[in-house]
Amino acid sequence: MADITRHKCERCKKFGIEFPTDPKPSDIITCTKCSATVTYENAYSEAEDIVRKLADKVILKRFGKLK
Image (cartoon, rainbow, N blue to C red; front, top):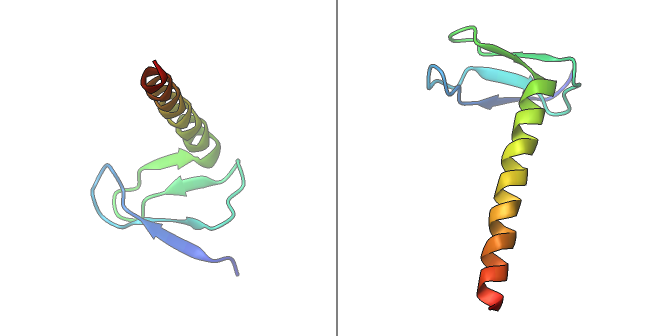
């Protein structure tokens, strides 16, 4: 049996999101409180975009300090 972690749903603000600690891209993540769903692959892709934007900000900030 896989380990399950609980996370807060941004839609209903309750801790109803449960998924394995090692999810597969095809896994569908569902909130048990409000039934909101997303595929792990889509969520991971969105997270990569956010991290990329943050990395750009850090790079620009550091180059700004070098001047």
